[in-house]
Image (tube, rainbow, N blue to C red; front, side):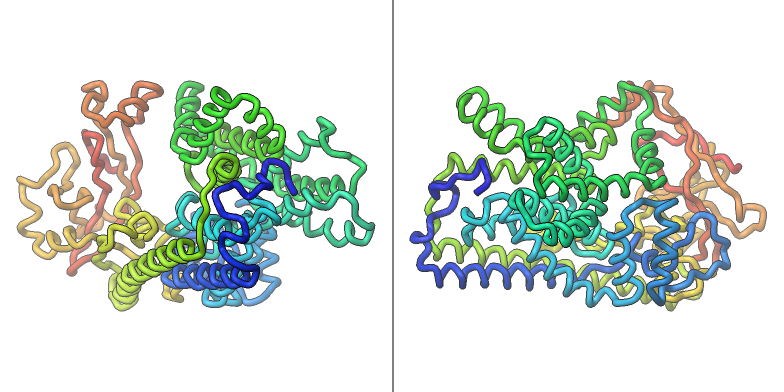
Amino acid sequence: MPHGINNNNNGIVPPLRAVGSVSHQIWLYVLIVLSAGVMFYLRSTPNIPMEDNLFFSFVKFDVEDVTCDYEPVPISGIDDIVKSLHKMYQSSNGRIPVHFFVMLFMGIVGVETFYVVNSVVFVAVSCLASVFIFSRRGLTPFRMLLTVLVLLYCMPQTASLWFCPAYGINYMWSLGATLLFLLLWRSCRCMRWWQVAVLCPVCYMSGWTHEAFVVPVSCMLIFVYAMRLRDVRSSSAILALAYVAGTVTLLCAPAVWSRADGSVGNYPGLVSWTANAVMSLLTNLPFDILVVVMAWMWTARRDDFRRFCRDNLQVLAIVFFATGMVLVLVMGFTRGSIALSFFCIALLLRIACRYISIKVPAVAMLCVLSLFVWHQAAIAAEARRHYKHYKEMIADFLASPTGTVAYAPLDIANPLTAPWVEPWAIDIASESLFDRAREMGISFYYRHPWHKPLRVVTPSEASVLQSPETFFIPANRVPGTGGFYTVDSIEHLILRADSAEVQGRSYTVRYDFSDGGASLPLRKRLKFRLYGLSDQESLPVGTFTYEGHDYVAVPKEKVYKVAAVDAD
């Protein structure tokens, strides 16, 4: 069995005899697998395709450069997918195998089938993660249930990360591919030539998935063989070479480096980059807990600390290189740092197996499983309520003659489900009222002509615009903005655009920092002191029609003091 895992059953779960016979164990495994699969499917169905998912159902095109009368071509066959992947490799990212499946489900097979397949994949990934963390011999039903809980509760963005095609395939399927490779590489040191020939393509494709996983794992492989910690003449070394070759293929895509440059370039100056990089690690809770626990082991149990590091050197190397990615790209506790989060949790569970001894009877484990099923069902019910509300907004948009609808996300009724329910405002936030990519995606996906763009106003804004004569009064006029009006209850500066000369203009908002940033919140004040803040900004603006009148709206800054709004 792998190093670093307790073999005396003194871990956080009981030995076999504590939970019953082998037959009882099998039934517990079956019950956990069925519960996890069914609950995952129920969580998946109230997930509306949005953002990238919408565009993956069409032949690849550049959203920003298309003309207003452009009609995208729906994916109708494998040749359309191949054409899109070729363009994507050059301009978007290099995850060809991953995005092949995303386009296959979004363009040809359908999201309903994806939800079923993705639920099966989740169960498979849970099994792989359980074996990777605890080893096959050390695996028990409670440990497998614990792994399921980790994947659904402890990963970043668990409200939506695993469930939609773009995110689920990019991250969960990539995680499963990486775990499959690590298990093969860890256990297969001497194989026949035909076994190596069969597994090499699998390892190559596993290395050509998502850079968040494959880059740290490939760096670990290079480190292990460079330090001669594994035999370079073994069959497992050939599998490692195939995996690294897949990663190199991914990194050869021109778009990968342009995305990396954009990430690093968001933080001008060494001081600001360092501050944001450190903040990215401090906000990654699994990483922070692992650092504290290992610091405790170093001070209180020095010999055990050395043994643990020696036995888990490979996983520690993955964590080290994943930490380097977070520091360089300043990704923070987001999807980009999911590999760091997962492998930190894996190490924490391995440490727990060394020091925590709890006998969990079958009845207690069934109670935990029942609580899990109840909570997941509550999350699914709450998510479905928001799903229906969002679908009503889409129906209002399709029926609206102008494309303007009044919509606001619902409040979450059950506070116990709040961190795991998506409020369905991810692509219609008020500051993205005129987000061209978003509105085109929704129009295209629902096969609606784009000449009627989606404009979402909040109910409070719809209320004031129903009586424009009481809103456009001197008391509500914003000084220095050239005719914009607002009140505290709305989120935009609004200008009447009935005249032709107002329509079609762009606007620049200028901010007042004459007080030295003293009125800013602490985080904004730190940024202002470190590298300054731009005193002007070109904001997404546009014209929308409501109740027979045309308006221009500019997002109202809630933190900065607006000095002026200038027409360009």
